[in-house]
Amino acid sequence: MVKEVTKLIHKYLRHDKKFPHVWCPGCGNGVILGALIRAIDRLGLEKDEIVLASGIGCSGRMPVYVDFNTLHATHGRALTFATGIKLAKSSLTVITVMGDGDATAIGGNHFIHAARRNLNITAIIINNQIYGMTGGQSSPTTPYGCYASTATYGHIEHAFSIAELAKTAGASFVGRGTVYHIHLLEKLIKHAIVKRGFSVVEVISNCHIQFGRRNQMEDPVTMLEWMRDHSVTVEKAKDMEAEALKGFFTIGILADVEKPIYTEEYTNIQKRAKLLNPL
Image (cartoon, rainbow, N blue to C red; front, top):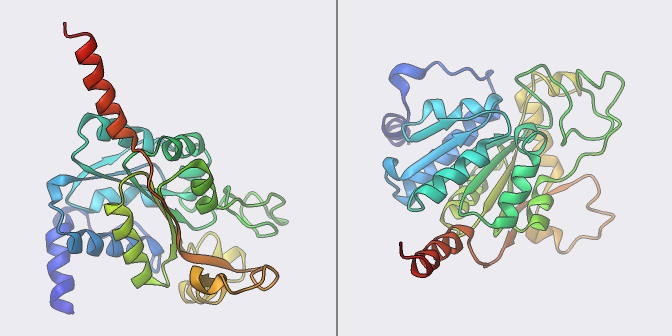
């Protein structure tokens, strides 16, 4: 096991220049990065075939550490840059990694329309329910009643579900995992990468520094235990009453459908245009 991990580290990480990393000890971002690397390795993808793009925030640092084609874009715009890359060279495997605020606040419209278009891109959205890097402000996924630097007396807005938004907007694949359920997370990421169309993996992660300390979960283990105790698999949830599911979130594959892919439709339009306008 140790030899395998060491092999992956030397194969995929820019360890000679970029470490130590900037994340807080116990942060879920490292767990997610490990799951992503293992999924890519098991798929047998070449590093030069992959583009990993990010926006701004704690998760935005992830492309810095991996030896792929990488892009650290501006806040909320990871999907716009990824769209351009995919349309310019559709043979590339394009993956974006974003935080909940990055993807669904300033980047919310880009996220909705990427799903609607069904772009052939994989979006990994790390949901730690807060803006971790910039001071612990509440985000679109901060639960009602929880505390943040901008909600010192309790958050009065209601969070929306990233996964449900992706399903409603038209994504081909939607999965939800956590940094506690690591084997499931790896499977979801692997499935998302090979799926044709826009694939979304929402990852419930921990920010014990900015969120946990304000909400009686001051260490990563406590937050991991919370994920364990408040999650239920999709399969199990099917046999549960709505009342029994209150206070829980589902994990697993939430949507997996076949539909036309924007990048292929775009290529077909280009071909038709050349036939009709040969000059």
